[in-house]
Each structure stands twice: as C-alpha cells, then as structure tokens.
Length: 175
Image (cartoon, rainbow, N blue to C red; front, side, top):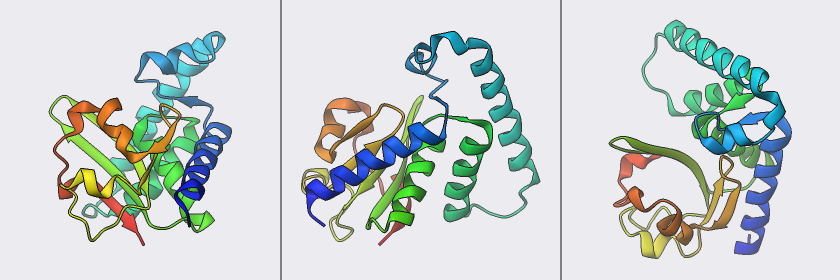
C-alpha cells in the first residue's frame, strides 16, 4: 500500500468508529460538546461503560493478553455506545484488521498523569521505537478520539508529552 492508501484507511476507520459508537470521549470536554442535547444519555452511557468495564475486568482471571484487551475494549465501546481513547482505538484497530490493512499498531502511552491510546499504520518494526524521526516518516496516525488521521510525524505537535517512545508503548501489533 502507498502512504495515501494508509491515510484513506485511517480516515475510513475513524468514520467507522463514528458510525458505530455514539458518544466518543466523555472524559474530554470535546466529548461533552458533541451532541449537546444528549447530556442525560451521555451520563447514562458513561456510567454503563464504567460499571460494565469494571464487572468484566473483575470476572477475568487470566494474565494480561494483548489481543483480548483490544477485543474487550472494542466490545465495551460497542455494547455501551461510548468510549475513550482506549476503546475507540480498539474499534478502529479491529476495523483495520478486518479490512486487511497491515501492519497496524495499537499504542497505549502512559506518561505520569497523561496517557493516550491511538493506532499507527505502516510502522516499520525493524526501526527502533525510540527512533521516532525515522519510523514516523512512512507511518500514519489514526486517532478516533480526536478525529485525527495524518502522517505520524504530527504526533510531535499534537502530543508533545509522548516522548521519548518506549517499547512498552506498543500494546499490540499485527503484521
């Protein structure tokens, strides 16, 4: 695939998330501004998501399974019709996987009191994750929380607290 095709796939994934998860990002001001007349429904969806997520987590007795995590976040967003960056990125990731868009990475970045999840398409796994300047050039960002689909180099502008990247930031990858 060409980079333009990865960008189109990223935009398609964002459109898919928008069409399948009614309330996005209720942990952000933007999430509450969207659909301003649906405040009571948003509260109900957010509470349902929190309770359902906690219940499902407490029922799971295994160790951390990366693929299961993505699938459960996807399922939680669809079942409760809301999601934050983790859930929305999982929906986008699984959409891209079904579409055959490879390689794709689900990133979960935790930096103290700031964290964010998003999907990266077309990242060269042979380039060290710490060499952002090199791997970001052909890679494409898919961030359904903020409707961002662009060259991965924009991560530097949009999320300056993200650096330096660590191997643990890549939660799951499919090649």
